Length: 241
Image 1: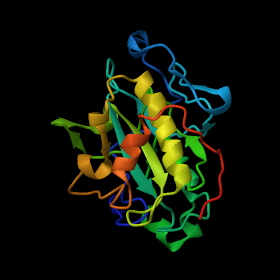
Image 2: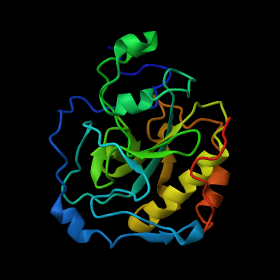
Image 3: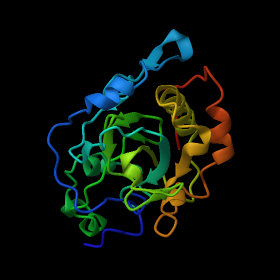
């Protein structure tokens, strides 16, 4: 199989070989250095936080088998923004969920045969309507970056958090997605102070010879302004396209 299909999951990457992992085991050394829970008040006085394992309160938990432990003592200090759609340009089904849970049926669509056996994951997925799913706790390593480099440092999966936006490079993302992404990012920045605004990058920035996402349709200026704005209201499932 070509591990670099040039459509729906072209933005995902894996570092081969990556063994099938056992249930997540969190490095206690990392926890000892971790900051206390990030607690941020959002609309209507509802609090969202990140627990010690890195699960974000309010996200739907969908534990992926495609994850493993970060190298001992690794500081999480990079946030990577991606986009994904399955099949290419289609937002109607739950195929991304199946991909990240390692249960995508190759017979369900001709494109899926091209990516059969691909084992990838992201920490978070934000659907078009703002629905938020978490597949890997932040303290664990998700398999989203592939062969990559940031600021001279390779293997970005080791030290990064990956967020997938359901979308394509050239189709505008939704209001709900921008709002949800800003909300999640503010929580992450409080919990992981090593991630500064300068250490938020698109997949294209860390794998420029292979990747293009989140693409020209993603409004970086809007996103960066929004993560500085506390207390933004986020409708869980507003109307979408």
